[in-house]
Image 1: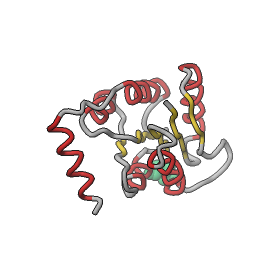
Image 2: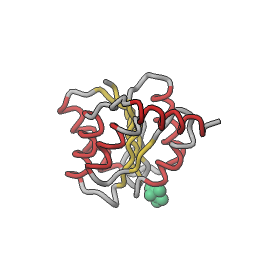
Image 3: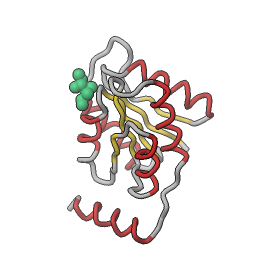
Image 4: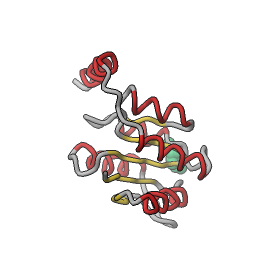
Length: 146
Ligand code: RB5
């Protein structure tokens, strides 16, 4: 599995902690985020990461900004992306199982490192349930894309 990861200037430190964690787990990643001391706009980073997911180069994406909200709003504008802004473990698990979310967003100003790494782990490790009722609803979401 390969993960695309991006962040804006509000979240370089938390992104580094996530990268370290992915490295320890032996999970490949592409880092498209901005570094410490750089500035960038979260919609641009959301686009870059989501394009890696929709192209199939990466299976999942992770986007980190101050709150995670701006990233999720931007990411969900992109066809084929189901981005979930999560700050709790249960939502991060269920958004994989039920929504087949392919991008996880969270905020450096909202969650601490411990919670962030738990969110990353459960998001990566939880498969989509594939149940008929969930697929029907995911298809309804896709239909909203027009
Ligand atoms: C940047 O200051 C901040 O607005 C951004 O990181 C994010 O929180 C937006 O949702």
